[in-house]
Image 1 (cartoon, rainbow, N blue to C red):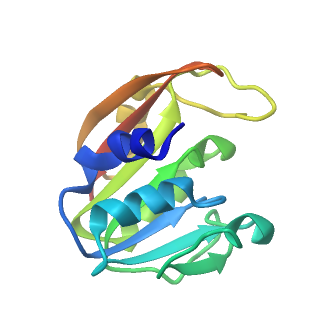
Image 2 (tube, one colour):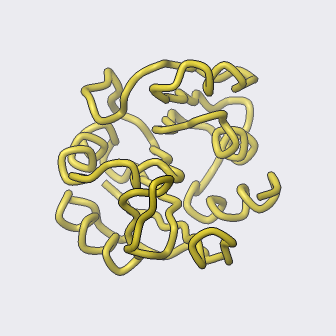
Length: 166
């Protein structure tokens, strides 16, 4: 996807400029860069991925950490968390989602980007539809969940973005 497409997927969930955000499962930083463009230069973004070679390519004034987001992270009082194409690697999503909820300030936002299917493959092992996301988000304590955007995907039919509040 082009950078403009990544920005468009998450734009309506970001809500404003600045703030403290984390990108969990940042990979090489494609969505991290989109988030940085939306938040502007006054934001503080922490990009986390367990693959040290992937996060080396992340550029800009971004705090990069090599860590596994399924383990405890020292993050708190965040304005937002982005999980783009990362939560589908986790089988038991409940503990991760509850930990993310605890990282956010009241009213903080969780933006997810996911494939719109519940059938995985070796590269996307545990995807979930938006309808499934609504239930998972509520069970983890999130509220005001809304679908932001759906786009075609040549891999698994479609991708969607959604936002929920802590």
